[in-house]
Length: 348
Image 1 (cartoon, one colour):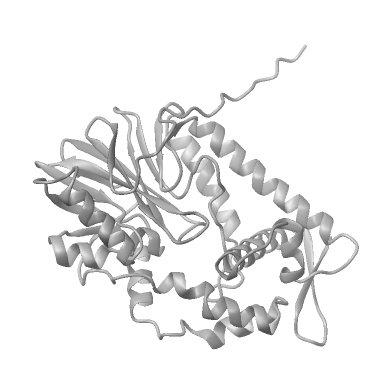
Image 2: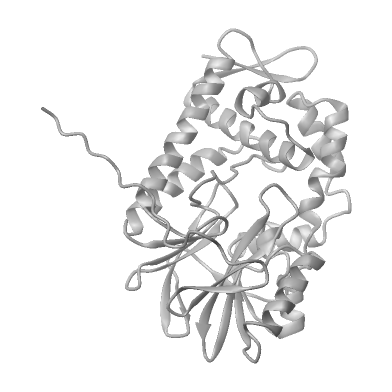
């Protein structure tokens, strides 16, 4: 009889996160801080790593008054009399890079960041106020989103990208394979795409610590989206390859310190779950498109069967298109374009 191997379950060493405005010792020389977000996902994790008598900051929070106030409360409360030394930002999303400019100006922090993530942050900083609305209109209309919903997404759903305080005019580049020294620790720098462009992750093998950013999260699947700038990108394929690379490079027994949710053990189990999740989502799309050609907008309710606000619609739309592009590349879907110029897809 063939023995069936089962993956260990995820375990969570801390049942509850720190309250907003407080910090928590999550590992030796590592503090965990949560900052508030005004979305359904209502927080982002910030980690403070001991460095030269102070604390290096890993990610910064959204560029809002609430996050600034939370930082000030921490520095006046649990970290009173202690200093911030430097900052590492994992990727360009505003909940991670949003306060980089403010922290640099207020506390003199230098920035380390992967080059694509830094340059995209810089591009958003100098983007027009409408973030290229005409480009996005044609992109959304091509994939079947109605005029009214498109305008709602452009007016409110894209506000997220504008919630930053900019980035410093100079930075230290992080590359895959680099060794990054923070205090007494030296971290292996890993990078991975799909959720962002070249998101940085930090791995410290001897202490079994893996700062996973948003690439691996315990209870939610990181958003993997296609955007108007690269409409034919196989973002999902890039993400799945990154997950497989993480499984090869990082030991299974590390403490995973993610950008959202609780720290956990069970990295390889979670990687397998995420790969399976996206496989199931592709199956759902194949079933939906089996008998009738559908647009991305028409596929949305087959994948997300709950009401979506403007912010969520933007993410969900990009996520469905990421799966569609991946399935087109594999030959699982066939594109159909009718006289109205709207793209539709049918199962091969």
